[in-house]
Length: 303
View (tube, one colour):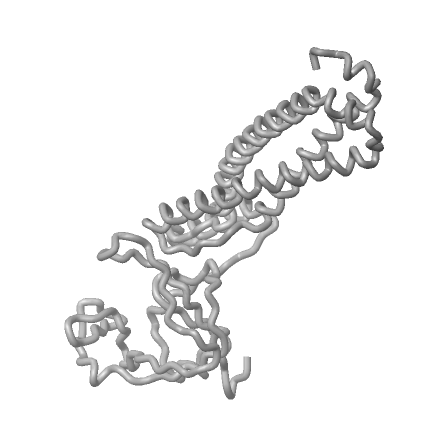
């Protein structure tokens, strides 16, 4: 906001389609935060506005008569403008185009940046925040029509975001529902396996009790077994899951330029869940046989 030395925010995060590779690629040009860039701007021609380019010339159109055009060579109509960049960011605001690199300044500093240059054909965009976006949108649209102003570029940004959010919620419901279902099946299998294993070892536990193993020693032995079960499962499961995640990343990366990362929060939840299921199942199974009489258990040939 310093008029003597205004600093711009440069948005450098462009996602463009590369025709050679056939994929969307993310392009970043600048690495530093404090530097100057020199751009070319069209000079002001009184009574005309810049309309576009043609070969090696710029096209200027008469403000009052659009049929009156001038083709001005670049060396006559272009001049340098220096912009001081104070910060480079890859976070693109919704009001900034995703095409190319953009520099953001406060509108109040327009004269300090561009000087006396004005373009009568500049387009202006206004973002309106309302508590009731739907009612506000309809009211503004009606007002525009009543005043003969086209509303073709009038856009309800909140409604579009809400639509995208609803779609994401639907996808999450199906995705997490599937994950929960698979997790319950896996937990049930673990529960059944450990419970069956404990029941088949009742004679073994009775023998250990008969030779003097205390309840504390029994718990320590079973806790050690739980650690072995959980660690072995994770030693197999974590590398496989990371490998599958990387394969999914490679598949997505074929069409769009993105980065690979390991979801550490999900990994931590998975690790805790594995040990929670194993330990709780073991405790439940041992509670069933805790009161067994060692002599009766050793006599029972069915165990």
